[in-house]
Length: 450
Image 1 (cartoon, helix red, strand yellow):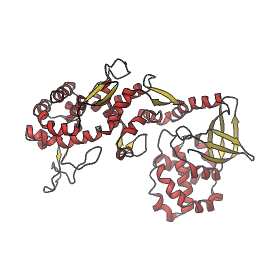
Image 2 (cartoon, helix red, strand yellow; image 1 turned 45 degrees about the vertical axis):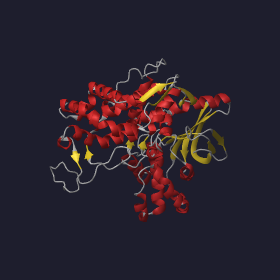
Image 3 (spheres, one colour; image 1 turned 90 degrees about the horizontal axis):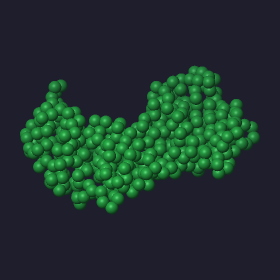
Image 4 (spheres, helix red, strand yellow; image 1 turned 90 degrees about the vertical axis):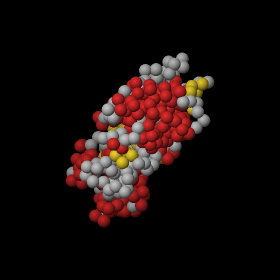
């Protein structure tokens, strides 16, 4: 809601203006909700809203007992940089910074209200159109296309919606307190929905440098916050980031979480990878507060490590694609391993067959490949990409000019030793992925081939 204004008309309202952080609360009219939806986004909300049981129950209340909605629902929590009182219980809200202003809590309520209004506007003939809506981001186009119809049925809507607005006192102190408090309020209000550590980290700005470094093709595919629908889990991206961050170990900065990081966690405990990154990023050695509790990365070494994220997902996919052939070059029979499936269009899949109906794809770039297998087999090799990096002059960078070429030229050689570790693990991908000595062996092998 950057640089937007909206006027809300309250049916019942109270204000609290004793403190620097001020609050307006009450129930607003359906027309006010329509005006709010006209400009709304959920960027400030830590979670993305999606259609499901929660929105279905809210819509049921709005349809069957609209007079009870204001009592059964918490409604919306908004943050605005300005709140100007007008006549007849109307207030003009100004939203200047979409990172911290807008809808802080109640995204599912807003989505359900938008769906309820659209159902009234479109009637039974609109069900097919509304079935295309899966999350909040799907609303805008359909909403904008039907503004005339929405305006026609506005007077038929009978609900009042609880809307609370937080805004600063019009002083420098008031603005400072607003900035310092608003993110903490958003987190606290969302705690009852089990806000994930990844979602909290995203809201705190911890992932901005990673997001900026990644291939733009992948950015939109990542689930940066709960329910935003990304194909790739952000914890998988965070786990990869520790391959480069590990090169900061022992550099004299004594950065939190770096020296104690266990390589096995990139496979065995991605939640630990997230927690470790949060611990690192919230340190004053690494970042500074820029907007209240939102932090901006300042540490040169950490920035340089994140910059390598433009390569790591591609290299992960490359190792996944090349691993089966490299294994078979060392010891025939990768396809016979119980957890491995094969794509061969000449061999139709039967109920108990190892053969797939369609080709599998790599995790990040969705490239077709011949084998589908658990990534526990390759995670020690993925971690060993750190041996192709160096820390020099306060920055992490590639030690080799072309890491892709290194993989092409050396993976088969590494597998002549590495396949034996797979055999000793009884071909169990979990044992391979969880055994620290295999990570050490793979890293040492990469080091000898530089």
